[in-house]
Image (cartoon, rainbow, N blue to C red; front, top):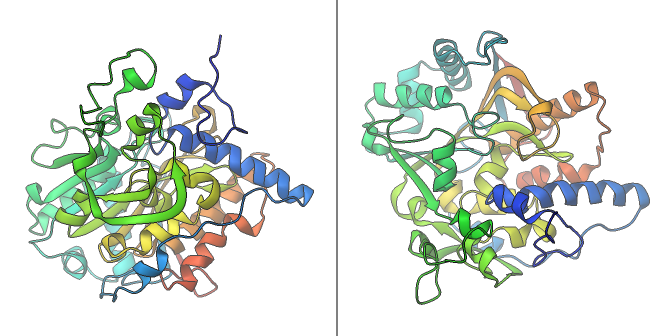
Length: 409
């Protein structure tokens, strides 16, 4: 028998507590609310009713005041998106990726994006002294998570051009999710593997009443020191104060702090999301980093859901460091996202490259809408599902209008 769902945040949405904690973090309530909210918006759009409350204030203006750099979003190639397709990337019978084919796709994508060879492309974005963080998406481990072979190709390129392996860090918000998806020191020797935080799954799932694994005697989360209290995204929305929320989100209140990995250690970021939906919107480049770089995020889903994917990226710690975005579309998912739903996944055998994550998401949004329609999914094409991308253009972070270039290499 199902227990009553976790209701601290938004009473209208109910779901099984075990399912909630099983899909924690960028997943968890975020995944379930993504589905519920976007479904509610669809119904509201059809009925003419408002689906969300008034937009709360944020500290976006503080981010916009900081002077830009040569690497600031939309990066060196605003609006340019390169798509590389090879039907041999994933074997249709075994579903196993071909490392050699993927490496070739990666190299073609990088050189087509920059118009330069691999060495000169490296020099456009990096120096040998950089500390480069590869932000993966480990949700749906082994099914719809970032392919290890894509990360292999990235590391091979960086290392061949003089970046030491110890200056490369594969990261995500949750340490246990990285491990589940195969991002381990054994698989990537010499490369750093870092989660911004930990979470006690047993306590979260109600299997243990002992919170000492994540809750310190002073009432703070063991991962609290991993976040930078001086660098934050503020929104006038309170986070719940109950223990399950704190276990998952480290802090509550109105501040979402950036991880110290980003503020103190990384000098450049490569963002490697996967190709999947979240209701009628997508969960790709901007969401992978927007909800993965900060804590205390579930409070933001209802009032600021897609805008978070713009405003978090406007802060210099992301805006000036994230020089490449590579969407892994080797196996894609067109429905049921952003959590994994095997029956809606398919071999797509594509990689997408851009310095501009907003142009990248606009191109991929259009492609996934086409796929959803072809599969008989009732699609709501209300502008609200791409309005955040146009918002990014207004802020000077991306280029998503008719000036975009979608190049099929």
